[in-house]
Length: 204
Image 1 (spheres, rainbow, N blue to C red):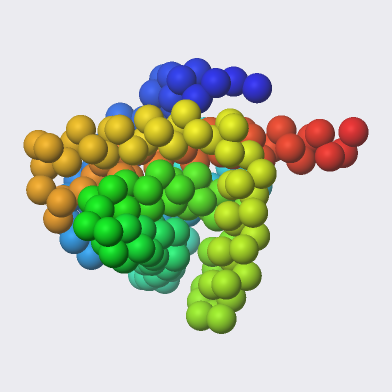
Image 2 (cartoon, rainbow, N blue to C red):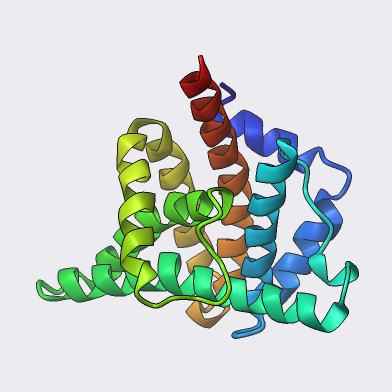
C-alpha cells in the first residue's frame, strides 16, 4: 500500500489536478457556495468506487442535466459538510469548551472528521433524499471504520490538521473552505486506496 505522501504525489501529477483543484479552491473561498466544492469530493469518491481508480473526475456540472446535476452536487456537498465536518467540530468545541479549550476542541473535530468525510464518500454513505434519522447509522458505521484503521489514518489526519492550522494564521476562518477542500482532496484519494485494499483482502 502506498503512503499518504505517495498518494499526494500521484494526485498532483494527474493532468486534471491544477484545473480541478483551482476550481475547488475558488469555490471554497465563498461561504455557502463552497458546498459545491465539497459536492465535488463526494462525486470523486463515488466515481473512484465505481471505476476502481484514483483519477480526478471532471466537475459534474458538465454532464447530463445541468440544473439537476448542480442541485445534486450542492445538496450532497451540504450534507457531507454538515454530517462529517460541522458536527464533529461543534461537538469538540462544546465538550472542550467546558474547560476553556474551544480552539483545541475544533482541532480535535477536524482531526477525526477528515478521514470520516473521506470514507463516507468512497463508501457511498451520502445519498439524496437525506434521511435525518440515518445520520446515527452513518456515524456509527463510518467512525467504526475510522477507529479500526486509526494507525494508518493518524499521520494523514495530523498532516491535514497541521495544514489547516498553518493556513488559519494567514486566512480568516470564514474562508477556511478552500484549504479544507484541498486537504480532503488528498484524504479521499488515500482512504479510497485503503478501502480498496481492505476489499481485496476480504476476498482472499
